[in-house]
Image 1: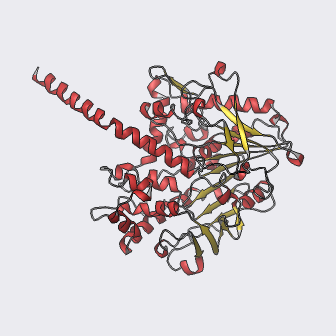
Image 2: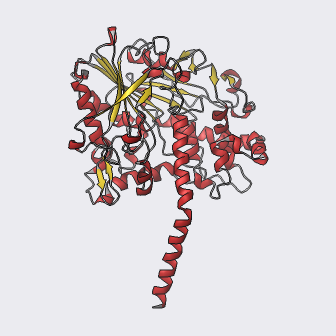
Image 3: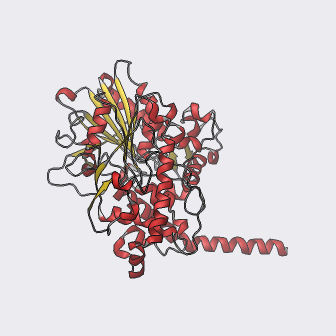
Length: 499
């Protein structure tokens, strides 16, 4: 009886702690959602000359079980092509992270990332979705589609949680959307490009070969993944933040509903991977890209801003929340935090080591992929996340360049087979960073090569000798945030080997 009483009291204590932390957990989910919105540039107010495209809900999708997390129908935005692009199609898969627990999915269905009730009725088309030749030289007159993301598993889930009224139907949403677009003219496409940003970039990899199979062999089909190269990296505490998250996504949509291991997420992952590895590992692009048969272009920042904040420096590295407000908005930093963020040699050294580790792991992950003549690469040394939908990074006078070529030009050259594009920028000279209020920096690899080696890149990849990179103040602040690990009691839990 005494043991039972102790057990009950212990359980009550745990429940009490859970209740006391519920508000903090909700605020953290909201903060993560705001971070994604900023990094993906989807919360920016449109200008006077913006191209605003209305939302179209997929009629009849619900009868096929193709619904958002809350059961509402999925949707997309379509801007029709014209002229020489009338029979060309570009499909952009929206990003927005994942939900890996019942709680996070329940929260998600109260946002546009889980319900079409909260989606914008009109969306601004910029960057790769722009209809202006001066902003989007190769794809401006194509049929351009943005497929909204509301399932929380990169359009790959299959399952349901009746108790919490959650529907994991990403694969069905994908299928229903493709069926509708084919009926609207995509079946006659002469050329097609499947693209995506962030979680949508992962989805463009997962569905790349499936997209190719929709068309006859005479159609030119390729895929682009923007900021979708999520790495199974070790965080500053020695853990694997992203692996833990992906394991939750897979478990939530498979085991929780008593589905067999040939159902749910695994069923929708490439069997070339699942026959060799566990489903969680097969959610990582580094384990998928070598077996993609369709030509694929990887666009990624070597210092991906989201992965730095959420994978390398998760909130668990700041258990007391000391840096939480400062991390999200530098105007909330106190004087001691600002002094720390300015950095000294120790801070810069720790920051450089961590960034070198992450960049080297990324280059190692794409080494085999880069050997294929049909594939393309653009890995720049920016602190950014999602660069194809942002006009300032996609194609502008001061947009990031490698070898004096902007992202839009590089992707266009690759798609139309004008020239091979496999470009990786030299590492950013981390310890030579100017104060965070400087808006633009010049990277000269001839100077920096004595500090960092470029020899870890294969001969098939072009290394830029000089690149002008543009940073916003918040991006530079994000870059400094990795110095959180350089506190007196910090310990390094990972090796700097790229293997």
